[in-house]
Image (tube, rainbow, N blue to C red; front, side):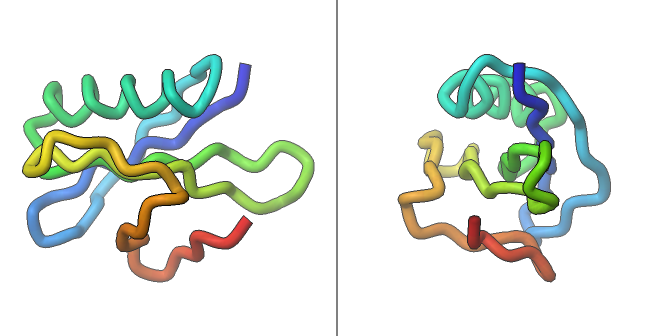
Length: 87
């Protein structure tokens, strides 16, 4: 089971912490991000898959509570400051 990193963010885009959880796939991870966003009462959650052997985390997507829609990596979204969405 892959490990995903969830970065709850405030309305100003700042993420002060992250949560590491296992999920079966990207879709399950985005659903878990929705639960995390609600539990933390944050503006949204960035989701990354932790690097296994490649040495680079992979941007999965973002859950934005304002639009109530998850965005996959194929949907244009902003990435956290200093982060790269490249695989």
